[in-house]
Length: 140
Image (cartoon, rainbow, N blue to C red):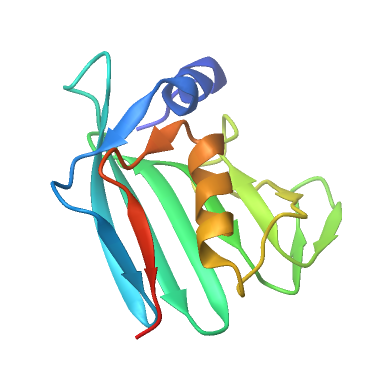
């Protein structure tokens, strides 16, 4: 199911909280699918998928009810947008009306696999999401 750009922008901008009841201990070589809900409308549910290994940090955010992909960090060496613009290095894919699979991306300068929490927190800021109980780095 498709949504308008305005609807996607509203979903990204609204305040959201992860629902876990304990601190997220983000370990190396781990993957989590975190349930997230809108603060003002708890019926709006999202999934934040987080993956981490020694060489990369991945984050993917989507609306649960309609499985609408809204944002994703990508570290492919290169990405070509539908208009032909070429991006090299880490980039952020955003929802763009008319494209269901986050085909559009923009370069980012804040991605750093050696600082996974900094990268995660920047992404969380961009999607207006927080972990109320907290997140900690675990080097296991």
